[in-house]
Image (cartoon, rainbow, N blue to C red; front, side, top):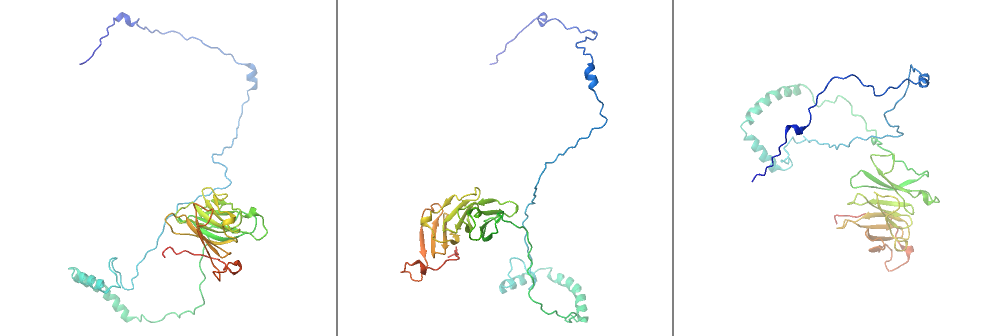
Length: 324
């Protein structure tokens, strides 16, 4: 059903008609010249002004995108074979030859190639291909290794320090370095650094342990997780996105009694287990979720029944086999 409403008005209710006519100009404002302002007017013939659209920078770096490269080739010692044929397998080679011999174009192809190769065979028959034109030079020793320096990552500390250990992240774009100074320097020189290989000017983050860092190890699963062994026997854990002091630290009473020499992650389901070795002869297993106490430990002693620490073997390096 449609609903309509009709509204009707008379023409006289629309209002009077507008009649426009030409009229003369009307003066709204008349401002006379000011003699005082006119005396201050000066005509400038030249005007010099300098502009600079770019920002003032004291340092600017630009890196291009890293393009992956690869090298490939083919060994023609036994001839060029298809990818699905192993030249070391006699049966595969025999089957492939039979397949080629049964091809209809095999005979015609051999005839065309024989006419071309015949010319080169005749040339080889007229030239002694085994003649030695140049004497063999005597061996002058080992060749010098060809190395090229790509970047130099300088320690920002004023003291002369050495790098004890380096650990690369899983993606290969960052590395953590443990620095150590000579005996007698203050703890202010205990800082170590994580570097971005694309930027050697400024460290990616700074690690500030309570004692000098002897070894570091990146997590094989988490790109931001890093553990380190200190010279006082404690273990520290960092999140490299935060840096600074360690997020977790083992208590001094339940860790190594001497400096930590090496530390390694363990391939586990959680990816948070690791073990550490020290000069005190103890191998300790840890869980990164709880560093209050080690989960287990092992002592390397000449006599297992003797608890004398003087007979302990010093642990200088450890390794973990994930395949065993």
